[in-house]
Length: 187
Image (cartoon, one colour):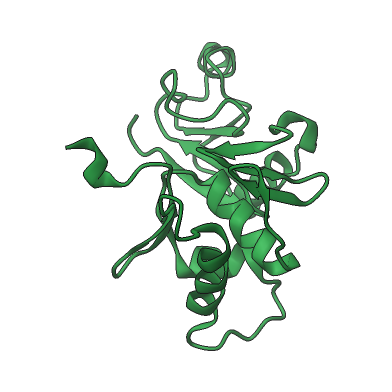
């Protein structure tokens, strides 16, 4: 997919594609897809929507319209998202705000819960410190230099207990990721 990428808003990503909608399995089925293209003919728009795009925007376009469409797609009702998010033996229920690892409940603050939910929804994908700041804190927050690192450390101590396989990993110079398997497990 040429020019495909993910934009996040409120913890729910919107997949952006330039030429064609995502190939099967390339994006989660609950992730909205906005197709950006220069192909504005009716048959091209219909083909793009029939192929799986949730919205279609023809270039050139105003950035304000693109952002408005992305916000609209990101506001989809939660019913379209999984009710319980699972990564390995870690479970998070957004409705009840409950978290458990291997069946053992984990108590989290609201901000810790928001971080863990964002990492779990980004399962296997590295997220930068700035992405975490945008998804976990509101616009009025004036971040201190290590706010994200401190919060990740607190969540890591609660989720990655000594008797379990670590799931929250630091990717030096990039950010963090949550994954069920460590890359060295594939050897």
